[in-house]
Amino acid sequence: MYALNKYGIIVEDRNELKKFVGPPLGDSFQEFYGLSNEETITAIKYYREYYTEKGIFENLLYDGIETLLKKIKDCGGSIILATSKPKVFAEKILEYFGIDKYFSYIVGSNLDGTMVKKDDILKFAIDSCGIKDLSKAIMIGDRKYDILGAKKLCMKSIGVLYGYGSREELEEAGADFIASDTDELWEVLG
Image 1 (cartoon, rainbow, N blue to C red):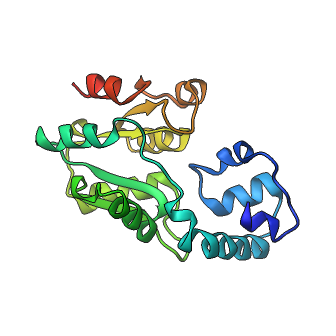
Image 2 (image 1 turned 45 degrees about the vertical axis):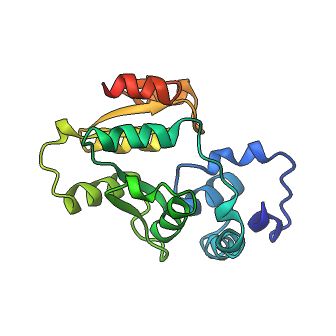
């Protein structure tokens, strides 16, 4: 909202901006509001101006997420975060909420606008962690970008309904499983 306001675009309902969650931010500014390449670069600067100081901490953990992360870790699972969010912000958020201890590796986009596509981020995570057998890895995500990124790399995926995507979006993208909450996700993970 802050960045769009700089262009005189007033968004009355925050829910209208949920479509920004998942795809690269620059793509969203262009697709949903028709910003040019130059305007998009500036809009991202405006977004980060607000986000770096305040917006980064305007989050809440989903119900049951810390318990789930602990269970996975306690069972010997390795949790890797592969996000389109810039890595530096993802690390701060995990640390702020005290859940960074559950993650063995964090991959995110770069502040210079490189490595923003989900499949590139996933591929980097897989290669960096030395994962050779993708049958032992699974992508968990709440948007079609997560599921499509996994499909591109021939990985299994679980779509979760406690995020920003809908069941329809996740099914259309081809999620192998869908979980409505963290308890159901734990069951699916088995």
